[in-house]
Every structure is written in structure tokens, then in C-alpha cells.
Image (cartoon, rainbow, N blue to C red; front, side, top):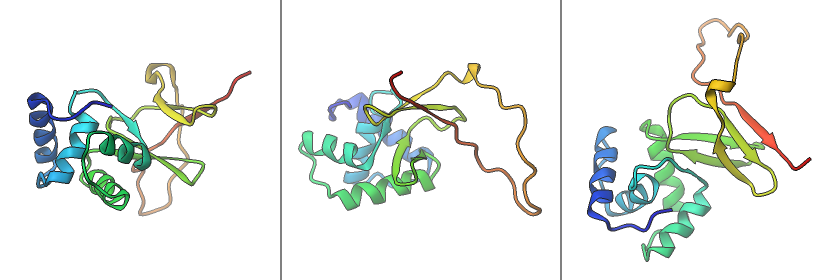
Length: 142
């Protein structure tokens, strides 16, 4: 992840928060800079973002990181991708796209969307609509 404090990173991060109507508190801005400051997309866990924030000298608790990631997801800035029902990754790329989950390194990366075909989805129950379809392709060494 990036090291914070580049003025362009701060500007990009502030605009990212503003696009969702989130107030740029010190902690939100610090975490946003790590997530989107350099303009690259990220797949992070709360623990990896916490470690990255500590590496920059930012004083933030793991609980605050979890709460901030939740706020970013609720605001539509990120998507949560759950792997194994117990491990959550947070993705700054919010368009519909598939993922590779690398079992040996426990990392999540984007998979090529143009190579994925979903022919049909099951009929949804009355009164419901599809909010999102998550495709996680698990990889392990052959």
C-alpha cells in the first residue's frame, strides 16, 4: 500500500470521501489515503489495512478500521467480498467483476471479467431483487 502524505493522495482521498457525502475525519482520511490515494484499486482485510496504517505512524485502533471499512461499504465506496464465510476482503473497485482467491497466499485479486460468462441466474423470490453477484474463483497449486 501507499505511504500517505502526498498532497495529490490527500486530494484524491478527500474527493473520494466527498463523493459519498462522508465527512473527512482524520482517521477516515488516513485510511482513505492508504486505500485510494495513489489511484490504484485495493483488496484489503481490516487487519492488513490496520498494519499499513500503523506503518505510516497513524494512531488508529483495529475496531476503528473495521468501523471505517463498514462505513465506506455502506456509503457505496467499497464492496465487501466474503471468502469462506469468515474472511472478509474489502475492494475499492465497485463495479461488478470476478475475483481469484489464492489459497496459498490468502490474497484476493481481480479476475478477467471479459472471460467470465454467466448464462442465467435463478428466479429470485417475489418482492426481492438481485443486489449483487459475487464470483470468487478459488485457486490452489496443481
